[in-house]
Image 1 (cartoon, rainbow, N blue to C red):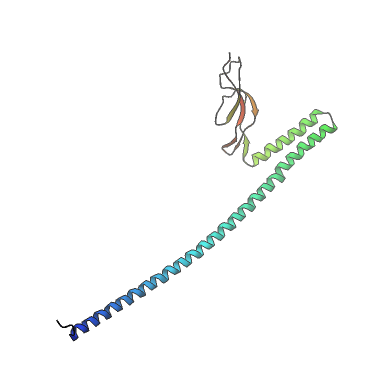
Image 2: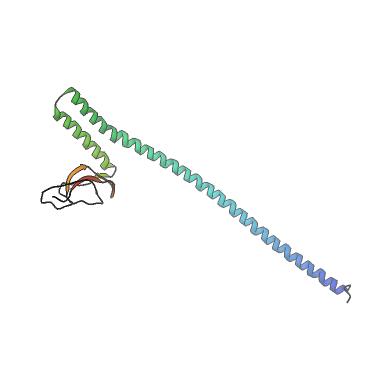
Length: 181
């Protein structure tokens, strides 16, 4: 067999030319796809940077809002209640009149309760004789009693409890009737 046949050589050149053209076309397509992917990546990176910037701005705004709310809560609520209590104690120093003291302390207490209510914090309703509710009450002591009240009845309220909206943030601390001897 002779490989020097001009037709075979011509066919090889033609096939080689077709392959080169095909490769060049595919290379161009790949370069275009690569260019589009690079553009997309660049756009996504810019969008991510903008998102991060917005998040930082929102975090800063949120922190400022929280700080302002705390400042307002203290200056408009807590401090006036403290001022009333201080005034009541100053009245004690100057006057042995307990009614003045009671009035001042009552005003301070009402001011503090009103402040808490304005923040969505309310006292949990509880009375002696109520049945213990583990969702609302914390039993701090058991008491023995000959009363007709059933076991598990609240006999004393040691400390008020509070709810923020519908969530208990501090249960009522109570004493409860235990078995009588």
